[in-house]
Length: 304
Image 1 (cartoon, rainbow, N blue to C red):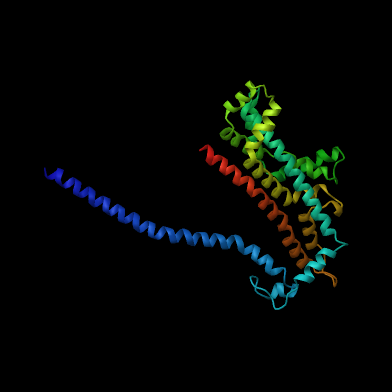
Image 2 (image 1 turned 180 degrees about the vertical axis):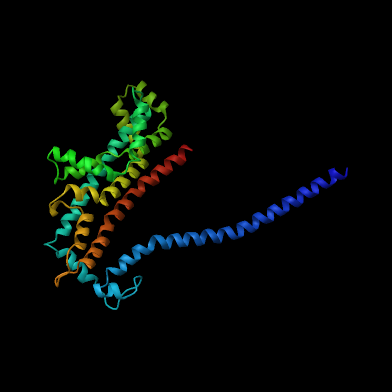
């Protein structure tokens, strides 16, 4: 009787102490999370802030003033003037080249990745498991290791120093194929495809009119990943391209740092100005792709 009487009492005491412990933990956990988020925010924004501040300075102020605050004079107009007039405005040519390489490469890669992911997800064919294994292994290989084989291949085809030497390698990305395949596995039901086949729809019509509209979220994700990857691509263009008229923006900005300072321009400050301008297309792409993410999340919520 004593044991039966005491057992609930100790149980309540234990419950009370655990509740108090959880209360104390929650009391300290929220400020800790907020502090962590503030530190991560500062870590993310600080480089961008430094870039914006630095583009307003001259070379002397850049090295003799605080890196996180403006100098005594504003040189932003002069820095951008030097950038846009350098070699008769070749910066705009580099910008156009980067948009071409990143935009066309991202569009083609998105289409190929969605189609390949759909075939791996919904069709059975000999060697499917082997192909899937090769896809998973291949996206673990660093891209830099493929640059020399690609150069030898394109040199044999006489495609070096052409836009195709940069565009063609961007058309296929194993990770994007895997990403599309995994998304299709969980989003596109087999019953929907079978119903379309019963109604007489062909495979191309099913893919174009039924499957593709359901894949706005992975398509936007693949497009952004590929666009950013190709926009920042450096090692492949510097290996493949010789003429400065075909350079990417990243390669052009790098060339500024290899140029000696003269009385007409300062390579350091115009490289910083070019870096600021290079952020704009990435921000525009991110903003334009947001609506596809929202529509994909809303579709998933309705299905859930």
